[in-house]
Image (cartoon, rainbow, N blue to C red; front, top):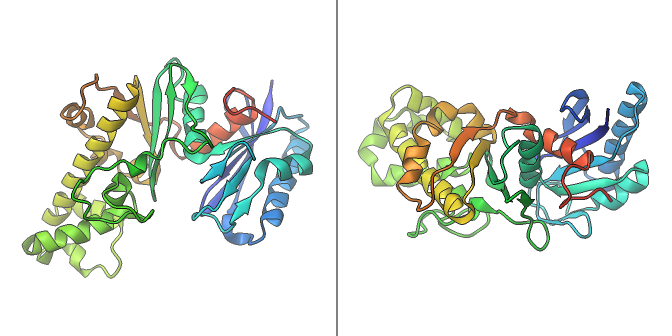
Amino acid sequence: MKYAVAVDIGATQTRVALGNEEGEILEIEVFPTRSFSNPDQYLEHIARLAKTFTQKHNVDIVGIGVGSPGPIDMEKGEVIKSVNLPFQRLEIVRVLRNLTGKKIAFTNDAVTAAVGEKFLGAGRGHRNLVYVTISTGIGGGVYVDDTLLLGKQGNAHEIGHIVVDSNEEITCGCGKKGHWEAYCSGTGMPKYAKLLSKRHPDLWSQSVLRDKETLTAKDIFDAYRNSDSFARLVIQGVKRYNAYGFAAITNAYDPEIITIGGSVALNNSDILLANIEKEVENYTVNTVPKIILTPLGDKIGIMGALALGLGKEPKVPLR
């Protein structure tokens, strides 16, 4: 049996786990990413956990797989100027390799999740796969003809920045306008609701959402489930923009299957995935792929990092 350590770096939490080639997690620890302001101390903590896990279970590991929010420089093995992490620079490969004596495989978090889907999830047996995360933001990872697409620095598939609104009425977190993420992500949906409140003041005035001091995506979904007319209008728009995004992905990559994860999608799949394939068909020239919720749930990031640590993805080698 082969073993690896998996590291899933998130803006809020970091997960470190020991797992095997069957996808079984033997041990996992979760800690707040921002509990460390110094990047070296942060990586030292990860290295300590890796050593503790392997010693406790008396196993040797193939390597350590790491997925992190970008932007990244895969050649240098580091995170550069991430807006989602408390570190301007994180030299993941060099520092972790020096601390543990093990080889490291590293790429961005959404691509890491796609690797998890490909080798340990619904992507098994499929040569053409796209994974989409709808959470605080929107991102993705892509396989075409069994090849993982990465781009020049490993930052390909910023699919959340596909333009879905040519009127460019909402500014995305990146500073540009009209992006998918600006309308349909956890941070974008409240912005979209605010825009619609100005267009439809009559519905807004009767909505339970008008009393919310700080509107969230969860508030909108909750109101929708309680038959709030304004929330229904917002969700209709979100589903339409999601269909635009999935259609663009389908036209660009021609996948056999699109899997969806991320907290917004995982918690509201009954709403967001209802009739999605039929909606996408309105906007794509290619055959609509199967569109499903990832069976790996919120573990997809750690599963992807595990697959990387086991050396399963040749485009992201252990080094």
